[in-house]
Amino acid sequence: MSPRIWTRAITVAATAFALLQPAFAQTKGAGTGAGAGTTTGTTVGSGTTTTRGYPPAGDPNSTTNSTNNPSAGTLPPPPIMVSGRVMLEDGTAPKESVAIERVCNGNARLEGYTDTRGYFVLQLGSGNNQFQDASESAGGFGRSSQPLGGVGGLGGLGSGPGTGTGSGTGSSTRGPGLGDSRLLNCELRARLSGYRSQSVSLMEHHALDNPDVGMILLHRVASAEGAATVSAATLVVPKPANKAYNKGLDFLKKGKSEEAHASFQSAIALYPKFSSAWFQLGKLQVVDGQLDDARKSFLAATQADPQSVGPFLELALLSLHARNWNELADVTYHALKLNSFDYPQAFFLNAVANYNLKKLDTAEKSARAAQRLDTRHVYPENSHLLGVILVDRQQYVEAADALRDFLVAAPHAAEAAAVRRQLDDLETKTIPAAQMAKK
Image (cartoon, rainbow, N blue to C red; front, top):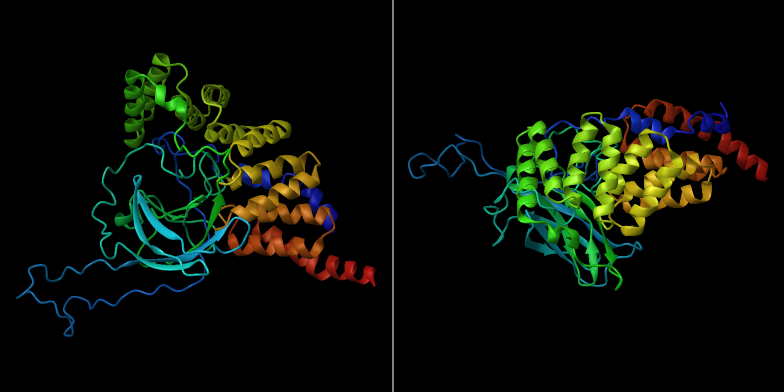
């Protein structure tokens, strides 16, 4: 099959894969606070985990015994190691050492610094930064500095920034709550004056996991960019409405979606411009299959707070589901205008829209932007789409590279077998033919 034929055969390749994912099947009660959620699916590097040895209970070499230690038989938990690299958005290393912070429930704790090339290797919780306060206020649903995930498939494709942790195979199989409890509601980020950092969720990270969390990008903050992480629209919410909203979040935490639905509606009745309440109500409506109502709720959220990115991304998923490419392009354009650094999934969806609108230049530009920002490969589907775009543009060698990236990040994806056949076709037929034609 020629590349041109299989390219046309998967004109909606990225979207078809998205629709096969549980994009509109979020478990009831699994919601989080305004603009928050969870993301899984990041490739975390290929290093090996090293931990300090702890002799098992009863080992004759152990210094622990029941005579002088009342806690004999209970071993201390192994240390949690993390490593990675901090880079500037343009791909260069910072010219100075960068602080690495562990942020748990909004409380930042300095863990260490990078070396002169941006690399870091840290033992979390060492020294004065112990873990006893890491999970305090657990279950808080206020917006974190970099909320993760949202309603949607594709490795958490939704209203939160596309960062996270997972297995080394592209999509994590580890469920919520199976990470180290010491890292509950925690994330890792870099701190450098004048820059904003990507964040890496640690909620599913375990002491025995590969310590490599990949690359953390720093974005230079322009003077025109607001530094506030909380929209001004949320600061004028009346107390009764905010109380009803928080009650709804508490119901979500307990898995009581009907009660949460009623609470969010009460909050909106008390304050019709409550963007976060509209947003949460819309996500519940998506779960219930009420997509038209969800669209109205997300639109109301954007009208109440035009600076909030989350509702635009949820509208983008609805546009994707409806295969409304013009609307998808428009909605993702607005999302990227608000924030073009924290949301690689917005670039990916914009690329999907423009590819299907036959605007290959714009599609390629957006796909490459998504590739650059998605440093932990949360969205391997973008590599697949980029490969398809490059085949259309007869850039076969680069297309093959992109398809290989997809297979490395998501070797067990539903369309992995088809992509392998496409890659084989490129490598054995198309690329040699194209190279011969140039001679």
